[in-house]
Image 1 (tube, helix red, strand yellow):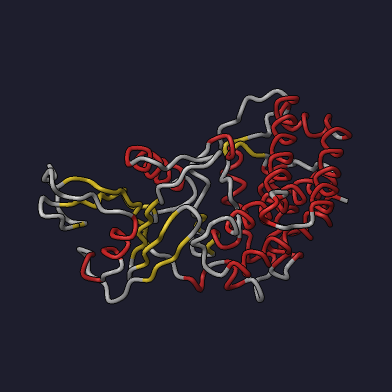
Image 2 (tube, one colour; image 1 turned 45 degrees about the vertical axis):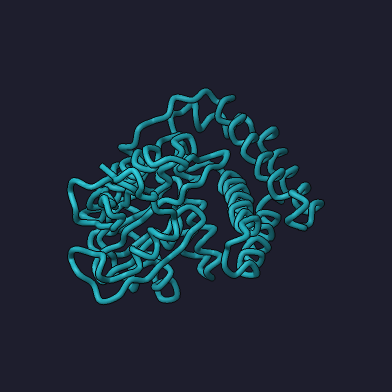
Length: 337
C-alpha cells in the first residue's frame, strides 16, 4: 500500500518517468513520445507503451484509474482480432511507499495502466509505401479484412435504427464544428451536413437495407492507412476501443473511409481498388452513391476530430490541426454533393 503521505503522481510526473530509458525493465537506448488527443505513446527500441489520458467527453470516459484499466484490457482484446503477436499485455505503472515509480515491481500501488505492444517497422506502414504500392500489393491486407468482416459479429439493428444513428452522428458533428470559438465557415458546414442528411432521407431504404440484410458488424472503427502494416501476414492496429456503438459499421463504410484517406494521400486508385476487392470477395455490390455518402460522412467526422484539437489549449501545432480541418471539410463538401 502507498504511504499516507505519498502524493499520487499526475500525468506529467508519469510522463517524465516513462520518458527515461532507465524506466524500462527490458532496456532501451531511446524513448520517443507520440501524443494524441486521448493518449501518450512511449516508443522504446522494441516496444510501444500506450498510456490513456484522464479525459472525459461525450463519447469516452477515461477519468478514473479503473476505467482506464478496463479500456486498456478492451483495447488488448479487440486489437488481437486483426493482429498477430503485436498486442502483448496490459502492464501496471506502480509507486512504492517512498513515491518512486516502477514498471517492474509487483507489490506496490498501481497508479496507471499501459498497453504494451510490439513495435512494427514504420517502413511497412501503408503511408510509407503509398507512393509505390500497386493495387495487388494490398491484396493480403484486404483479404484479411474481408475474412474479418465475414466472421465478425452481426449487430442486430432495425433499418430505421441504423438510419437514425447516422443522422444523429451527422447532426452532432455539424453542431460541434459550428462552435463559435472554432471560427469555421458555418454556412459551408451547414450546407454539407444538410446534403448528407438529405441523402439519409432520400436513400433511407438503401441505408436501412444494409442493417436489414445483416451487413452491420462490429468492425475496426478507425480504418486508416497509418493503422495498416503490409507485413507477412498484414497487421491492422489501433481499432476504436473506447465506444462499442462507434464500431458498429457497414464494411463498405470502413473501406470507404480507407479509400478517402488513400485519396487524400494522393492514391485514389488504391481506395477504389480496395472497394472493388471487397465487392468481388463478398458479392456485396451496393450502388456507388453509398460509398460517396460514407466518404462524405467520414470526412465530416475527421473534420470534427481535427477541430477538437483546436479547443485543447495544450495542443501542439494548432495551425496543423486547422489545416487538417480545412482539408476534411473540403472533402466532406465534395462527397456530399
